[in-house]
Image 1 (cartoon, protein in one colour):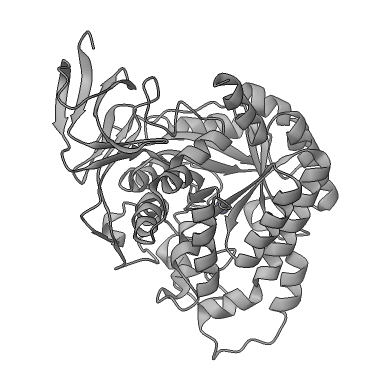
Image 2 (cartoon, helix red, strand yellow; image 1 turned 120 degrees about the vertical axis):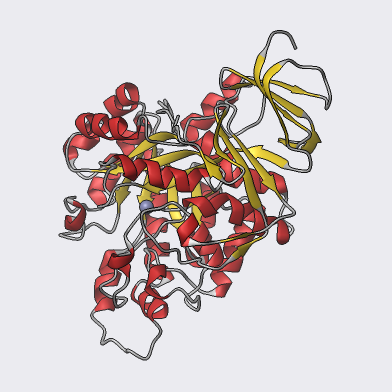
Length: 469
Ligand SMILES: [Zn+2]
């Protein structure tokens, strides 16, 4: 190791794919990992930090985040600074943020990037939510010019359902066209799978106020609503050759549908979110826990953990948004859906996953590596190796964290997990060599930068195979 490096992390146990935790010192120069060396190897570094007894994981990647007070786009500096602070406090070093607009994305992208730059503690990329024909026709340009190869659309936005977000209604023919166009462009499609026609029928049923709020919400959007839509979009994917990444999978039924389709067609990927691994309709969080799809029952939670163990579930995201407390403190029918949670993805998945005896390799995949691979960020992100970005979560597996809204930074001012104890503590979060979060203290200088990407889904996996062939 020649020359002077910027940083040396000494004494930690470092996660290496295929080899588990290894005693290695990590050396960083210019924001990338410049060396992984045997403990005690003499290396000259401007700063040396002792992390004896701690474990170093690839920085978390939250593939599912919404920013902005109306959850469409980040507009104000604090939309970026507070929510990304929440992320780095939880070991997240990269987030992929959904932008939602019916306008052409060139302008939306530029404005959102300008808000993030200088305010984001994490590195960030964008997914675009598509709603118009003009946007679909621009998919190739969005990939090649803006570096966005991942697109969401809401299968449930029929008629006026998307009006509250300014998005027009769509139908299966729109979805079919979008999937084909994305496949041609080497992009991945992230559908929000819910059959709204079933929901319309169910929500017209007379309301029974004796049913607890989260259970009532569940019954208005039961698993069949999600599972049918997953099944439909997966089938259309197989016909069009598209890659489909089912976001926020919440139920055993939806996971079963995805597994069945994946037997016949491989380019299908599954995300779940922290809430579906931890909360049920019996949880003590009232309307703070309202979200779409709804939190489910114990058997669904257990099945999703089994999916994580087996690999049927690829990734864990948060579906984070900063909906304010006042939008949630209402009856279940009028409360807003969604809540903050990006800071809990890594601690909960890894902490609780290890407690359940799931292999660390699988948990690292789900919280970092797999998202990097599927969204065109690997091997720059998602792994600890020489030449990769020095994005690191330094964790203490022998300590615990208690969730407190007042220390989660988010503008939301509540957490559905208030008081929950997690068997893991985030010690430092390092973003390209910079301590974004150090010993419980947030950096005053956000250094996050935009991540331009070229491929998504199966096309991104093919790029990785080429590189390592
Ligand atoms: Zn979402």
